Image 1 (cartoon, rainbow, N blue to C red):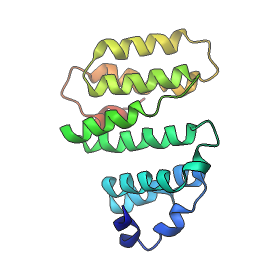
Image 2: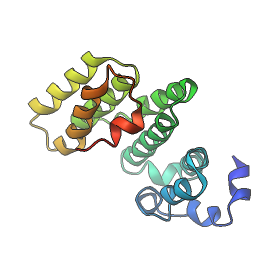
Image 3: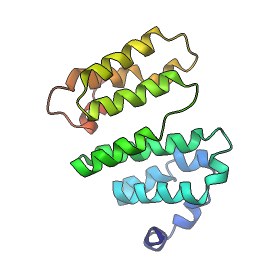
Length: 164
């Protein structure tokens, strides 16, 4: 992981960003992904989590959960079998307490990667039936896209980026 710091002149500054800036701003990991690629962004996120563990866990660990989810997405986008296994592992580390719709979204994502239509259908039902305030975090339009193409030979990136 130390190699990441040596490869990019701005990584020291990126690793010092607030969790929100690191995750959401174009100057954070997303900019590194765009400029240097997916695997570089994965290494950077993992390093950021390691270095900033105390700060990112102040919010019940939810920021770390979101970062784990993003690592899962990046691995899933890479798409080969080994990366799908890694993606599922990171997605499994992104479940959150008392966030039922979010957790249904995570389960549906894993279900898509495992080509398990039933899990996706159950996730859709759970979100649609939910009275929870976090219903938007279920990303139902993305899950519906997963359901549309789960039995086809569609990859994560294609399914995720379909018209919603």
